[in-house]
Amino acid sequence: MGSPDFRNGSFRSMGTTATLALAPGSSDPIDPVTARIHKAFYELEHEMSAYRRDNAIWELSANAGAAEVTVAPNTYRVLERGQAVAYLSEGAFDATAAPLVRLWGFSGGLIPKVIPSPEAIRECMTLVDYHRLILRDGKAFLARKGMAVDLGGIGKGYAIDCAYDCCRGLGIRDFLFNFSGNIRVSGRPARRKQWQIGLRDPFDRSAIIGKIALPSGMALATSGGYENFVEIGGQRFSHLIDPRTGYPVSETASATVLAPDAISADGLSTAFFVVGVDGAPHLLGKVLSTEVLIVPSRHPLELWMTPGMRKLFTPIHNLECAVRTLSFQ
Image (cartoon, rainbow, N blue to C red):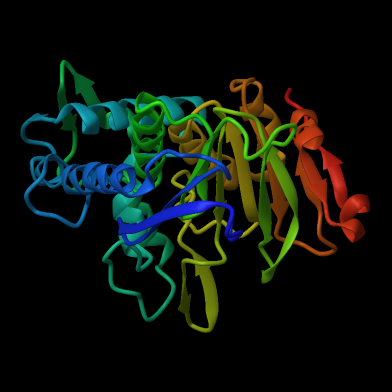
């Protein structure tokens, strides 16, 4: 993507960088398209950010246990898709985990000086339950006071799908959209070639473990604990919290998901990160259109992937022997 043959348009949104790359030879105008997507992202961020006090997400949390809230259509769609992933994953992904995430010092919470006690975690978990997020006719309700919603684990995926639909609606066919490592592609960068993405080594940010070829229309998302973490009492903890236990996930280094749309890839990458290699077969049985690659937090490095992912993934030369097969139950 860094080649001068590609025309790139970038902007900052939701605390990170978004980039639209057009294939070599494309005559599509990139600047006005990038500006249009940037404007749409600004509006989505305004609607769904958990940090603003003037949108339905804040109002939903402020009225928890008291009243339902009318939600804008985009936000309602994201809440619905988030709930779908929550039920599929049996709570491994849960948009109501916001109180837990803050307890551990993320999403605006104060970093604790000591590891939260089991009692504090148990108390906080009484506020985490996707079953208590009720959606009906464009309205949302959190059933217990103190509950809160954070769409950070799935909102970027929805934004990418909006960017994808915008480009396709304008007649652009060969492009790649990258939003903080969450990606969706259309067409090809050249004849007889597919878009290819290097997958970062979760133990070495300067290296990759291999490349993934992306079929047109597909989306890729990776969840990892190597970029966003806190240190408490000399220990490092990932921002990815298991809503079922209340503790940061430690058994998984990264989880990469290939799915038909970016919102699915985004939410499911979190779910697969949480369930890890041991829980992945059960979840895979419910999402047959999804390909997965999981790297456990252990050495020597192992690459657990579905057979479909194996057909698209080319490991670097010294990791061929690290590949393991991940199958659904």
